Image (cartoon, rainbow over all chains, first blue to last red; front, side):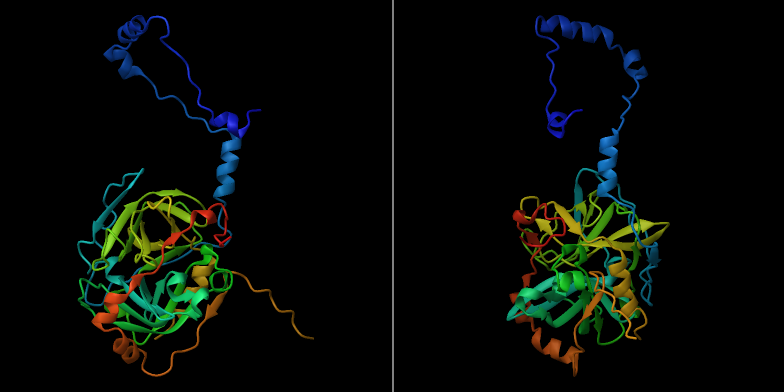
Length: 307
Length: 59
């Protein structure tokens, strides 16, 4: 049986060692237009080993599937045409968000917070009538004493303008897997705000316990590290790459987009099914998200009935 | 008889205390234009040494 190294070795043949010209002439003679048109795709078969490996990397979710639909702001902001763009499966397409008033963008905003004596920015989105969702690391940092201070959320922020106002956090929640273990598979959090926000911004729905590959994703946020400047809302549309938890997508946004949602379209509805959590510094165009499973449901259940 | 406590799971919730007083006024007092300009992006990057550590904990 071939070892893993054997499988990775490059197989090479020399087709035209003795008389390259003769071989090329034979090939040209053979590959007439008709023969090219009749050629069939080579069947791709996955070995049992490879299939087993993929299944181990993408196990079926354990909990029951759950989802929550999005809600438009009371003054409009319908979901229209989002997710219709063609996706380059091998890369990403990153653009400024053209219309911050429609779903899902109207729910997304810039997040300001303090850890220790330092000021930071991230991204977040409104998820319920009086609650905002983000990455756990945007509101809890064990190394600087725990919960963030003076957390301010500005939905639809644009070059210093705050078109629908600002909201302050009054209570924060994250997962034990993040606060105790600093485990990036649980890098998510939600915070309550000082007054109702859902009617103004709308709320972005979510999907949990679905198979990991729900892409292509539209990652949204306020990247602030170069080449971005944190003053505008951006989106990076990219395909699912791999992973069951965390999951990965093609995405080149930088620091400051942390906590922004990964939106997907299913059945004509838009849902969050991931968030900007981290990337490795050697591979900046691959973004990671915690898998949305029972942890997300637990956080949502805490805030869903806030009035 | 006392019921046995369920062990804590990573997907369980941890919560901060309630912020007392007018949270919006306090946040707005702090977040002047100048303070906003001083804010840095919260870190997104992880060191490659952490790669392969499946749950993402630092080594």
